[in-house]
Amino acid sequence: QDDACKDSQEPFKSYASDLPDVKVVKAPLGDESMTADTLKSLLGGDSFEYVWDNASKGPVGAGKAVCDCAKEWGVKMFTYVSSAGMYQPDASTTFPMAETTPIK
Figure 1 (cartoon, rainbow, N blue to C red):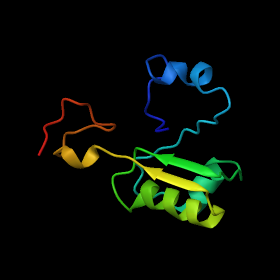
Figure 2 (cartoon, rainbow, N blue to C red; figure 1 turned 60 degrees about the horizontal axis):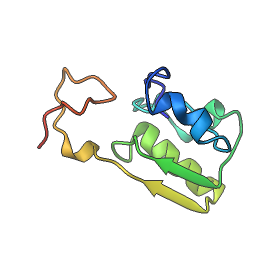
Figure 3 (tube, helix red, strand yellow; figure 1 turned 45 degrees about the vertical axis):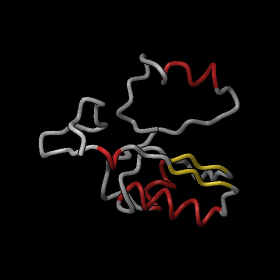
């Protein structure tokens, strides 16, 4: 989960009750300088069998780090879901993008 999420708002505040057996990890997913080693450090050495990525904007930074880690771990399933490609951010856009960001 992007560490920019607001834990007091849905859906984030319901993660613990709705997903009791799922470990949700927060990381600066907008960080284009992140590497696999940085991500592994944030995870405290944990590895995972299932990876759900709905934040990456492409194969750079955190997006590439997630992919590299998943490959190294030999995950059973890697799911990538993103609507980010439909938006047209500009220099003033803050991330995570709001659904009011202009679309292409």
